[in-house]
Each structure stands twice: as C-alpha cells, then as structure tokens.
Length: 441
Image (cartoon, rainbow, N blue to C red):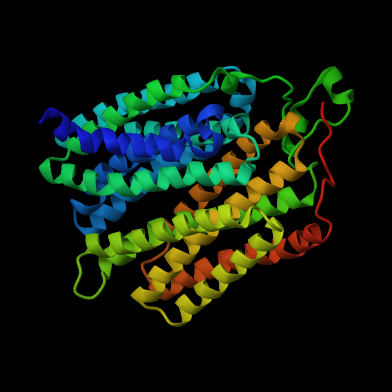
C-alpha cells in the first residue's frame, strides 16, 4: 500500500528528472539549472497570487488603483535605481554565482514569511517586503542568464539551452498557479507559506549545481559605453575595453527591439489588469477575465519558446524584425477593432514575440560577443530589459482606463521600437557573421 501511494510522486519525479537531464543536460549541469528555475517560477507565482488577492482584488477598484500605484512607487522606482547595480556587482563577484542565487532564494523565503504576517494584519511592511522580493527575483534572473553559458552540453546552442530553461519555468508557473489559488482559498497566508517552502528547496538546488558555475576563467567585463566615463587615472589611457556598443550593430539593435517588447509586456500587465477589472469579459468576473488573458499570454510565451528552439536561431535578426512587425499589426488591429477577443489575441501574440525575440537576442550575443565577455554581456543586457519592463508598467498605471487609448499607446510603443531597429537589424542580417566583435581587455 505504501508503494502504491508514493508511486505517483516518485514516478512523476523520475519523469521530470529524465526530461530535464536529457541530451547531456544532466552531465553538464544544465538539468540542475532547469529544475532550479522551475522552483523559482513556482515560488514567484505563489507570491503573485497572494499579492494580487491582497492589493488588487480585496478592495474597490478606485482603492485598488491607489494601492497598486503605491506599490509601483515603492517597488518599481527604487528598482529602476538598483537595476544598473546588479550587472556590475555580478562582475565583481564572478566566483559566487551559486551563492548569489542561493542568497536570492533565502531572501525571498524570509520575506515570504514577513509578507504572510503583513497580509493577515494589514501592516505597512507589505510594500517594503514586496520591494525586497522584486529586487531579489530580478537579481536571480540576471545571475541565471550569466550562468547558462557555463552549462552548455556538447552540441547545444545557447538559444536551445535558454529555451529549455525558460520552458521549464513556464511549465512550473502554469502548474503552481492553480495550486496557489487553492491555497489562497484556504487563507491569505497559505500561498506565502508555499512560496517559503519552494524557496528553501531552491537554496539547496543552487548549491547542487556544478562548481564550474563559479569559475571565471578567461572572462573579462563587458562595459556599457556610459561606464567608460567613470574610468580615472591610468585606466583612461588603456585600449578601449569591450562593451555592448562595441560588439557590432546586431547586438545593440536586437537589444533595443527586445526592450520594446519587454516595455509592451509591462504596460499590458498593469493596464489590462485595471481595464478588465472595470470592464470584464461578458458574463465573467474580473478574476476570470484576467485569468483568461493571462493564460493566452502564457500559452503564447510557451509556444514562442518552443518555436525558438525548433528554428535553431536561423537568421535571428530577421526573426526579431518579423515578430515585431506582427505585434505592431495586431496592436493596430486591436486599437481599431477594440474587443476583449482582440485584447486576448494581443496578449498571446506579445507573449509569443517576447519569447522568440529573447531567444534570438541570445543567439546574436552567442554569435557576435567573444566568450571572454559573453557572461558579462548577458548580465548587462538582462538588466536593461528589466528596466524596460519597469518603464512599461509605469506607463500602464498612469493611463486612464480607456481601452482604445491604451492600445493606441501600445501600438505607438511597438512602432517606435520597430522603426528604430528594422534597418539596422536587416543590414546586420545581410552581413551576418563574426563582424564587429568586441576586443578582449
């Protein structure tokens, strides 16, 4: 009887381990990172469920908008200042990447307990604790991007490895969301207790990764052009150090295009959250309406990840230009023929495009950035993308709840990003190859 009871759990665990460790991922350590990222995604969605129920759904719309505005002011604005520090800090601590990921998990585990007390008692510590969770989560994302190149199995492209890690996180998020909703039905503290358990597991998984994650052999720093202004003394007379603006136009244009899509993602999350609460789908509650749009966006993101792995990074510049053009067309149609169905379509297409464009950005970095500075370049580019998401969220919360106006703004954001990068990306595609590579300091 005992064997029959635990067989579904052990069998499921063996199946997951077999999938994450396939094709050499187990021997290289990539499988461990996939499992860690899955735990990270599941923990974050538990926090999201708890905060959404407390800050958003538990009060009238006007008060909810004020609470979310306060949440943005306390969390997003400081993060905009803290985000540029994460990449340089990682450069200074190249031998502590496992410890950095474990520290991120530990911080969020402790803050989940603080949030559990805040949601029950309505304390003001809710917002500072939410700030800590956000910063720790974004710091983990930057470190994870820097770790992936160290764990590539033989004959594995970087885009394929990133697609596996991302898909693992998406599947875990989709599985944990209904569990979090069930725990929320028991009590507002329970999703946070679930997040605490997951983050504790993440601490042990962080240290279970191979030691080569902490190796910095052969690495140099990839500097943004703005960083060069802070060099003083003899350092100013040295040869120009490698940076994201010295690796060729393909990387910089791909990064700008991805920032556009990340900005759109932040905008849609906050704008549609209030719009659908005020005007839910016909015959549905606000929570169900948001869930439907969220599921469509998540499905699009998962499909984009799968397509990116299948394309194997063929002509990444053309892929980015194409998906941006598709998103622009859908955004314009959504503004002209405004409806809930078009909003759901825009969410799905935006999720698909964001995933596929990010994988294509990874491919351009792998192709054009020398290995000596590639890890640092991933850290810096991820930080810039997170800042773009913050800007989009701020625009979404500031706009009035007018669907046509909001989708016109979304279309304008995508149009600016597409028009400013299409020429450079297509030119880079015609001259694809190891051109414009950064010099190693």
